Image (cartoon, rainbow, N blue to C red; front, side, top):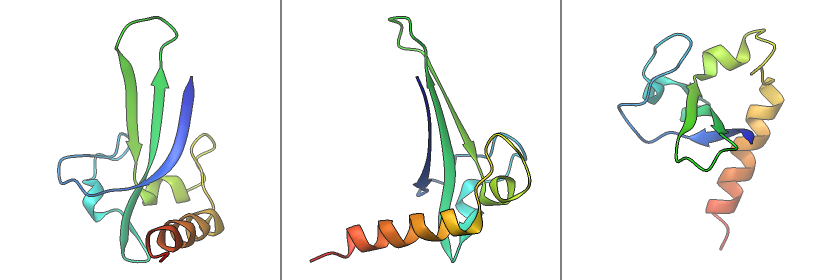
Length: 86
């Protein structure tokens, strides 16, 4: 099963798979975030592929992992609203 989702980054050692940039510096509206791509093999092994893509790579016109500015804004708004909800 292949899963693509936007995640907040709080690690200094994760890097972008395309441009090899540290993801801590990948910011959108001053919040560190990235696109996480997971591929769990259908076999019963524990192996799975996890790739990270920085904001710069996903806002370019790359077809496979492209996200629009509106999608990034709505993700941040939803995440902030969930965490700050009383």
